[in-house]
Image (cartoon, rainbow, N blue to C red):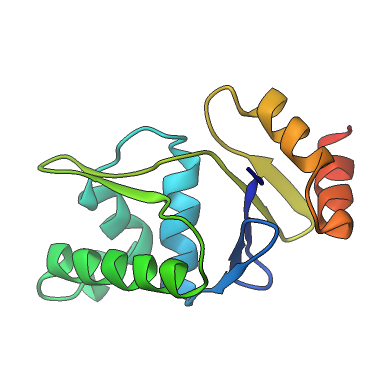
Length: 140
């Protein structure tokens, strides 16, 4: 299993062998989910992230979140990656595994019990350049 990495600069989600191109909204959704680790977050949290100004909020934001999650899953599947976004019915959404977020000259590793597992995965990551940049950012 390879580490899943969200590259904010390139707006891609990669498992090391495959990459899914993301829209800016999809990138924000994955980043927000990653910040929660593998805990479930409600649609209201995603709504506040995508539309911080309530005046800019669309008419039915919860429906739009559902549509964006569906499209995000489609992009991930089209890239041949395994599904990583789960639904907790009536509660919200969560990542099925930790995701490392890279971009803007910094790296934030998100997820419970991630550091040890991420290091192990990065040591065998097929994209050695990316793996080295992430490990350098972490000070490994």
